[in-house]
Length: 352
Ligand SMILES: [Zn+2]
Ligand SMILES: [Zn+2]
Image (cartoon, rainbow, N blue to C red; front, side, top):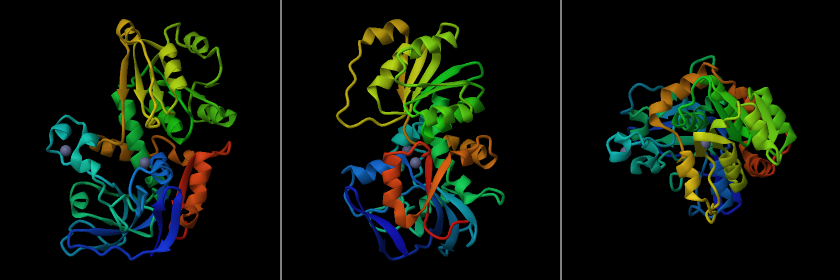
């Protein structure tokens, strides 16, 4: 089969690799659509993990083979593949911090080499513990593979929005209106909140409003805080979601978030980043700083419901479709987005 093998920093090789061999409790999925995630881009562009590897984890496809001991799944079924599942027994899992679980951190779906997701290939193997513990999700007939590939990124965004306890009447500032920021806007609206967005690209500022932001501003606007205060009765927003790794955005968040509000780090910063802050700002204004990384096992059925039942319009986030062969071009476009670049999807086989 063909796969995009990570052979070193910025070295993707589209090559022939063996179809993974199946154990008795494993399932082989033919990948139909795989989303390109910011985390894939980081793993390709920085020396984070030893090559060779096959990345890709926002995977939707069709079951091509099942091991002899697998029950409940058949060849031909359409599925979303989760690339990791928590143990549900450790201290982290018992406190709903699933993404800190050591079992969860071990990615086990694979298309060959050290298991790393495996979605950037024609076939991916799903290990027994994922098959048995809810890591395969059946896709209902009316839902396309494209739509289904959004379950994982939706869960990640949903987890952050849930951490902020977004509720009707609240106003949330979202810094960055790329594919993630736009999804945040939709989810904030879904929970009854008002969304305000910022970005540097005029096209994204427009798109933010098109998907439901009540207002969207240029992030460089020196009057940003006063504009935000004027639409929040002089209070500032209830919470800010940082969807860009920018210290400027963080300081804007401090300026624009109300007393007693929350600021959530969603985007991962460069390794050497440091942000100096006077702790009294947090103390006197009772601001909560929080982080949210990856998805939540507990939110899986809600994320699935939101995507499958079109409670948010994920299809409107898709801007580009590439054959898997052109992954390097897709990565280059995501790094230097054209005005109309949002979510990029990849197709290992024929598109449909
Ligand atoms: Zn992802
Ligand atoms: Zn655990």
